[in-house]
Image (cartoon, rainbow, N blue to C red):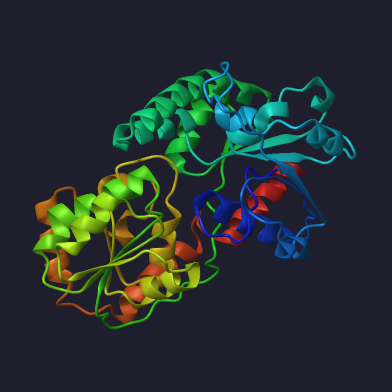
Length: 365
C-alpha cells in the first residue's frame, strides 16, 4: 500500500517502493498495489510489475490542523481501500505511517500486517521544522510531529515493522519488539563506478525539501565558495535564497531542471559527490546512488551513522575539514582497487536489493 504513485521513481520514498515491488516480482511474489494519488498520473509501468493496481484520491482538508490523527495519515483514509483489502486474505504491506489508517481495523485482525518504516516520522518532522523559515509550514511540521509521536503506538498492531536503517530498527525494536532490518531498495543492482577522475564536484537532492535546501546553502556559503573547481548543485525547486547564493560564485552551476537520468549520469561522472545531511533519520538514497555509481564520496557523520558505509566515504564534520578533504581528493584518481573495495563492501551488505527482497519473503512464510 503506497502513500504515493511510485512511478516515476524519482524521490526517496517512491524509489524504495518501486524497486521493492520490482524485486518482489523478480522473486515470484505477485503484488496487488494500492496507491494514493495526488498530482501523479496513473502509470502503466506499474502494471508490468504488479498483478493489479488500484488508485485512490488523497483527501484534502483546508485546515490541516483538524483532530489528533496526523494529516499525512488522515488524508489517506479511504473506505474503498478497506473494501478492496478485504477481497483476499493476503499479507498487507503498509508503506510508512502514512498508510496505516486501517492498521488496527478489526476486520483486518487476522491478517499478516507489515509496516515499512521510512523514518522515525515524528523526529523527521521535528527536524523539518528546524530548517523551515516559513511560519505556517514551521507550525504545521511542529503540530504534525506532536501528532505522529502519539499516533505511532498504532504500530503495536503490526505483525512486523520493516525498519530502513540500523538505528531505526534499534528504536522500533526497543518500543514494539517486532522490528526487522530491511534497508532501502534502489535502482542499483550492481556497482558501476568509473575509474579515474571527473571534472566537477556534485551535490544533488530535491531542493524543494527543507533539509536539502539547508545542506546546499551550507555547502555554498561555507565550503564551495572556498573551492577552486567546477561545482554542480542539481535538484528541483531550489529556493530563491539558494539561487542567489549560487549566482555569487562563478564556479557553481545550479541545475534545477535535470531529470533523474541526468542526475544519475552526473553522479557517475563527478570526481566527488559531496553529501552532508543535517537530518539523521532513515537512510539517504542519494548516498546509495553515490556509492554504487560515483567515485569519491564526502559526507558528514550524520549521513553514515550506523549504516556500515563509513569506510566507503570520507567523513568531515566541519566546513574546514570539508574544504581540506575536497582539495586533497582533487589531486587523486579513483583506482580499480577502490572500486573493488566498494563492490566487496556493498555486494553482501544490507543494501543488496535481492537480499532485502528475500528478507521480506522470509517474513511472509
